Length: 490
Picture 1 (cartoon, helix red, strand yellow):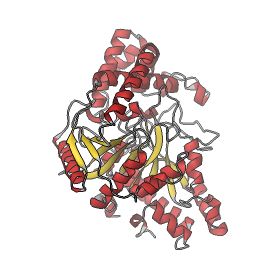
Picture 2 (cartoon, helix red, strand yellow):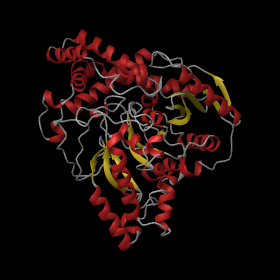
Picture 3 (tube, helix red, strand yellow):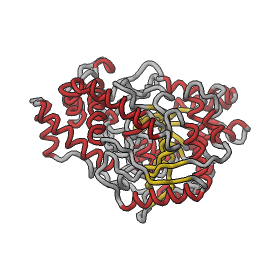
């Protein structure tokens, strides 16, 4: 099974179990062996629950696949992101020293639905502290690394999940997206990353206004579609059916604007042009378009909402962990963002939510002219690990301003922090802000062999149409068997 494991997606592995060609125990043993082989290099898995997963699989051998329930993915190995998706009895550190001993007592809805689908959870994946950064370099666990280049970031905040899938440990893994955290690592790691409409999935974290959704990063489109069928409410196979819908030409708006980013690299522009030509070759109509939005105002509103969430998780951490938060238990950037939330976030929140309503209405109007938008996922290729970390001087400033919170200086710090984050990862947040579905599709690799995804966004609750397009793109430009050298050599 070791040599064949990478040849199957989750649906394919489940079929092997269902037909008796492979046992659930063989599957989990293979996944664990791959994890042990590659995780020392990529640091994707930060909690191992191997024996419990083996025990579940052994019961499956004795009692049949129904020991995992009747789910279509019964026995398939799975990993949960160590942030915002509690698994009963397993630590949920959220990449933070404060939460490193916190053990939830109940499964979150997405975890319960994943278990009902038959997935065999055997570990949790690396994330930045409280999911704040678009790269995965927590002080607590150290950086996750990109299998396509170990010196490069796998993105974030679902960076460990994407590294594990690209590393061949699992065919798909749980991820969550509050500002791009499914699509960013999917782009960095050459995977398919689908962010559902904001009301399709339960929120992974309590948030003012709806920003975050749960789903997964995967190697195949059909795995993503089936999992969304199984974990969402009221869709009953709609996303899987969409993969075989008859061809209908789409009107695609080609958005070359950098949105919240400063500009787009030559690699990204080449990836966008390539995707536009591919879509046209498939019979779709692609034309240049513009958002016509005030992205400076959107950036501020988005970060105001994010800062209020940071305050809830950090400064009110005792509501989760039962322990009062202390400065030394959090990274300075998280501590500073939480204080911004306390000092100015709550004050500016009503205006931010009103802007969210207005921008959503404008995007709804734009989407009457287009079926789908083609945009960048990221402004540039993956960067080297450590390149975006706060400098020593920035850390000093953050510490000083949290001790002496002067509002005007906090606002300046927020603007500077936003520019540093959004310069690279500023092309995904809009669709969290508006609630639209969006996906990063792995169609392009640059001259250094690093993946560069492109993003397609659809109408609110138009998730099925995006899956139809994804299936067409996957058939025209297959990526499933593209593997990083690190993995191909093992």
